[in-house]
Image (cartoon, rainbow, N blue to C red; front, side, top):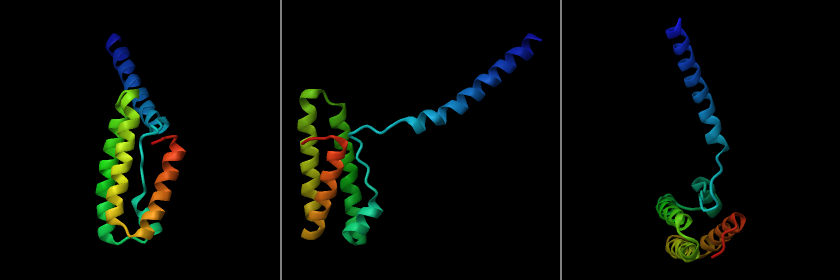
Length: 120
């Protein structure tokens, strides 16, 4: 009887933990330094070529990594690392995009950073 009861307790514990795990992930909010762009939407908005989209995705991956480092840095260095990441992203995107595309991109980036409460 004791074996049956312990097996039942183990099955219930596993079941409860499996049900609770997905809810924890859904409720987890991204941090304010997590900058995710929908590259297809941006590409349509900016009328980008396929090559430009590929380049933008590589630049954005680097930008995301740098912003993650800024988030993990101490308060004294966070602003400096954020500014460095944003300026590097802007300089790379200036090379990739035309002047019209770049001005639209800069507007989107500024709005995203402002909405996240990030100052640089």
